[in-house]
Image (cartoon, rainbow, N blue to C red):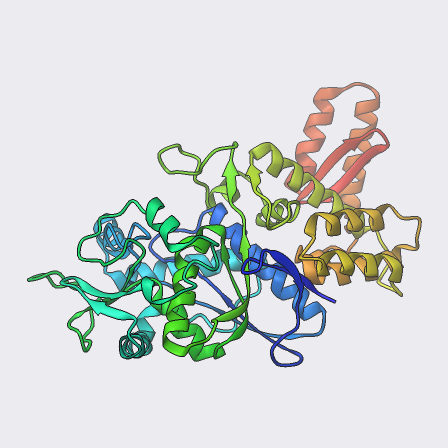
Length: 456
């Protein structure tokens, strides 16, 4: 039995797909005007673990993740500039060039972190007709109204607006610090924005209401309905999506189709850096490229993320990343010396699966991995089990299990000479031999039990 925490009900529930054996999963994707930072990436690792757990349980997952390449303002409450225009001004490129570059960069990070790619990555700009059609339905059903700058959703028409965040409309209004303009209510949001008078945007389209571009929220409602139908099984995002973006998605789909968009709503918590907020101004906004430049394996970051539950805040420090990288390295080096996979350890595999099926319990699952590593069991059995566990964890251990390092005789001779030099306390000679070994592509690690050889 798989139990998942549903933000909509604020409790764990048994997950049963709408269609037996098949899961429809929609994940909010990146806004491709800049690189994804490590806080964004935590979200996508969470999506990947969820998908892997579902597939490990024998379910077929149809995974859709949108690419937002238009219509996302710098503020979530319909204020500020379009992020793509900001990027165009910053880089001197067209919006399409920027969108392609940062989409490619995002997918490169996905591959580096061993995140399984979604089945479909629909782009907002490729689905303008679907978004316009949904707005027309909302208008026909009485949920949309026109102002001088766009078409807005009237949140007062929904009695249960605020059900996801569990905030009543008046509470949302009290906390909404926005310029009302011609909006009827502070919580109303844009479905379609008109291009400015006398101005020409690179990304703008004809519509029944005039030339303009879609609001941010409408793309997810329109594209999830196109590719997954409604309701679908699971919608994921970050906790920052709960109060505005996902609340408004639910409102749009309910207003247009009279039905809840998804049965389960799941959200990943924030990542902090040195117990504070990430920002460019503080110089602590890191990307996967930044971590690689500092000598870290991207999968060490994945291991770090797995060490905390997805619904718990996690604090990033380089000390914590060092610990994750050391743990991953130790795990890889340990499994290299194991025998080829044989009949596994059923008891520990069942324990692992129980942890993962209990709302994706990755910290408990990692502890079980180390319990397996340290167990007094045949290494072939341990190899079989750890490879099964890694189908969910995604640490690419298959590249290391039972892959003993083949050390050439010339390197082995140098290692033995270095060991003799160390025993004689001839440190200069020892360092010279170490450098020769490294030139040949091997690293010598000195331990209390003697020298251990690793390949670079």
